[in-house]
Length: 316
Ligand code: GLU
Ligand code: ZN
Image 1 (tube, rainbow, N blue to C red):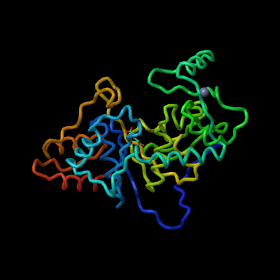
Image 2 (cartoon, rainbow, N blue to C red):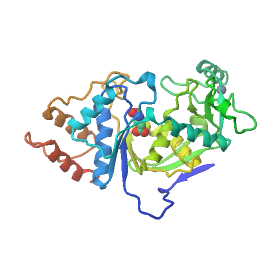
Image 3 (cartoon, helix red, strand yellow):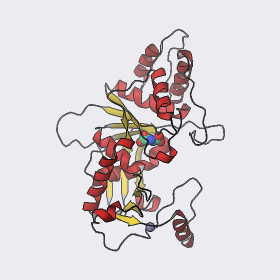
């Protein structure tokens, strides 16, 4: 199947107001790269007279760092990036993810997988497929049943297996990225049947982000380019779950001196927001990275004034 998303589906003819979001994982404080995503998504929402929501993606409990979510909020506040509505936590939204999994089970679109990473690596090696370090392995379909079916509740809640989506043949996703233009990804050779719920009982980012973006009525997703390769999977899930597909805009990544993406895992330096002068310096760096030009560079400007100027400059 080829799934081409040409425009935002809006089944009711009501005009939908812009709803954006920033969805950090609390695996550490904000660094220069995550501030770029926060600022870019905030400016895009302001420019469009929209709402900007904050969602803490604390789904992967083992990777969550205590205090990081609080620190992220304080850093955003110090930078003047205030959010609308109540902050949400993915760790409190298990029922929503479970309901989506049950829906996919009813549609006979999932199956259990008991492969270990090593088994998957061995199968791929036998087929002569090498996975570069840092890249996810393409699932070779080992556990996929000949005939898909609906599993019982007990089977579905069994903790022994991971649950994967069964992709149709040639699942090619085509969409228009607002920054990068036309994108296309064939999910079969690029990811394979991907995991929705892990065998330790945790729902995956792919499922949770789609369920939450739909629940929160998100119309625009502005985030780092490192997440571009997840977009095809997310659009496919939106399609099978009957959800609207938001507009996507992927922002350029901030790289370190070795040309690697800054990340909390590589212990990128947190942004400095102790004083408003520090915060403004960080905002200016992020804006420069986003390609914003001719912003006021006076020492005496307030953060609010600077953000106002940046909003006017955004998208020009
Ligand atoms: N939680 C994800 C991250 O911090 C971002 C999710 C998203 O923006 O879709 O990498
Ligand atoms: Zn398997």
